[in-house]
Image (tube, rainbow, N blue to C red):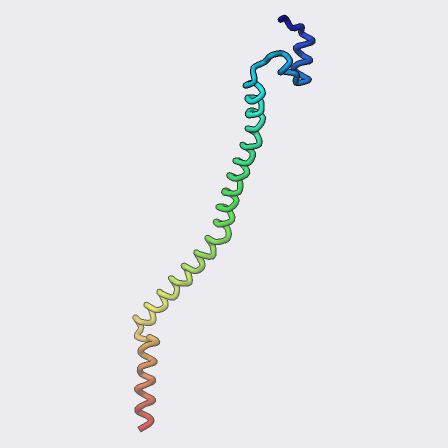
Length: 105
């Protein structure tokens, strides 16, 4: 059966595909084609959230970790310097106990 140009345009614009005897797989293919942008948009949104999470982790948690590491390093350095000059908390505490016991007698 021949189709005129105007009937072909009418079928394309009005969506009367079944009346022309087109294959049933064509509407399914069109539905799949139209579903791709929505799924792709969700995928891109997920990627954006992952990037945002990494960015926020870098600008918030990383400086806090660096500060805590610097504090720990400073404490270790001060402890070693105090041990090197002969002053330590443990020695002073034990000396105080000995001195206080000697003064009691």
